Image 1 (cartoon, rainbow, N blue to C red):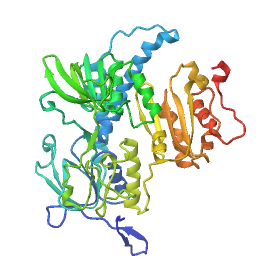
Image 2: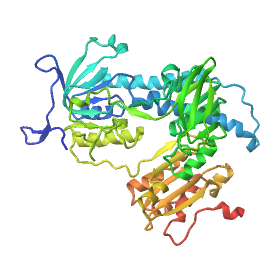
Image 3: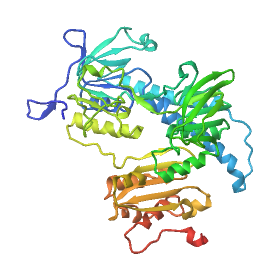
Length: 513
């Protein structure tokens, strides 16, 4: 592992050396660190500036990465609207009678667009006013391990001092160029109009009908959003359940819940698409010989949306000019310090194959920063890396699934406690559960929550796994607020606790259930 070299000051204290900009040949600007990508990777650049180094950030689009302008932030803002609509439609269950008069689709998509791009503009202004940091509008490609050529995008050429390419050189380079949606190579796809998960975020009009191809978390979230707002959604997924990477119990609940918003075709994959006068027809074949009956289906809709995963943006980097190696899907190979197979070239975010989440990229940025600037030798650790799926009900998970433990042949104990166990969960008539997986001696191996505010409730488990001893009692011992939904987390961990006495509430006992 390498980082900045340390020099000696005349007073005997150490000081990191820095490169100078505007190289002697006048053709190449030099920096201590170059970051390819304006998302989480830019944190490494700003940290380097704070330490007195020079840095450059190369980004062809808006700053903030996919999360800010075309991913998590706008999609969750949309899903919040779907949650409101869903709650209104269920209001009569709680004795509240309300009418849903109109959904101003174009107005709230426009408002969300303006909000997220304002955030991107603010980040751009912040970087542009940072002394020692240079931002390049364009796409970078490697000439060698230390040299990058930046090609300006057409839209940014007029913003630059020159529309010609720039040549820059860095002592340290960080690859953080993110990813983009995958469009599957199915028959007829070149001849039809379609949406990707990014296109779907800022539509001017709500489609009357929609076929979504892809049963992972992106497809499930968008299926819930459009379905809750009244679009007729057909959702096609290859596996027998939606969100198949989740624990099986979680996947089952999400699949069942989405059936109230979408027509679900699990066990199918899109084989061909064809444009019609009214939209598009998708021919779907059973992916495992069975599907929902073993026969092919044809799905007609006004629009088609692909949510079939994402791929890393490494194919434009000319990595063959470097010592950086990738796997077959283009993900960059790194060691436990997040350094690539080339000295002093590092990588983080969606170009890695491990955890494709914004919070994971931010964590990886901290690891890279520590190892590049301070040479701490900090290793990346994903054992307590959580994630969430913002369907209804919401999902949050950390650690291993039960299926993974069984596949590894590991001994474990489990507890699965429904939300109705907690008083507030019963009052809210909340569907879902908290499932805890632990080693026989009490080490937390995984936790999976399905229900309201799952993405928030998971955090105390993450903290226990990451900061405490990582034992069941780390969650079961602390006092939990009553009445609060966190009591269901408490109750689940209490079932596996080594404590002699329990104070966890259980309304199942009270109600006789």
